[in-house]
Image 1 (cartoon, one colour):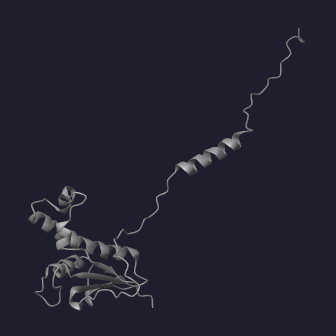
Image 2 (cartoon, rainbow, N blue to C red; image 1 turned 60 degrees about the vertical axis):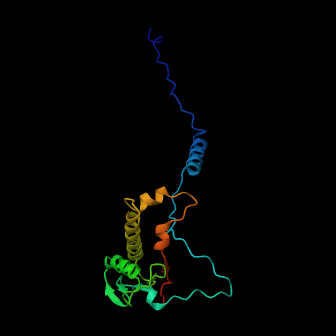
Image 3 (cartoon, one colour; image 1 turned 90 degrees about the vertical axis):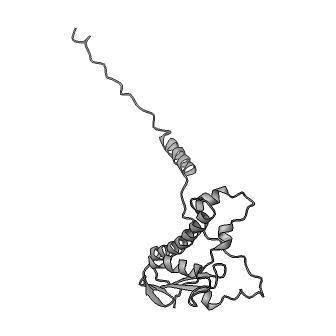
Length: 185
């Protein structure tokens, strides 16, 4: 009887792995194709039309240009006077709404230009803060003009514009921002 109770050798179950590398490779290709990678698009700005080859840029009177300089240390100079980043918004609004009263500011909003110049070593974050303050000055004035037209704010006014309608607020106070080449010398 001892010979009859012989243990049978058990066969181990195997998982076929021959095609495992192929499956992993196909999954990797699928995820590479299906994944979108967000790329920074930069700062969206509308540039003026390109001048003809022999055409000179239009002259801008010194009085109509508000000069903002940001040096390598991140210090802000408005018309060569030391200022803070939060002061920029108020200076831009004063410059745009002067209407020729103060000779240090623009003759009219249509002629006003805000010039921003940086140093090559200026921190990008500081440059963005300065540009944001300039734009916020414009947006606050646009909001005020939209309220005069009976809208709660400028965004509500913009929503009501048709595709072929002119933006009266932007025509009254056009955004004329000049971003000069940085000083790298």
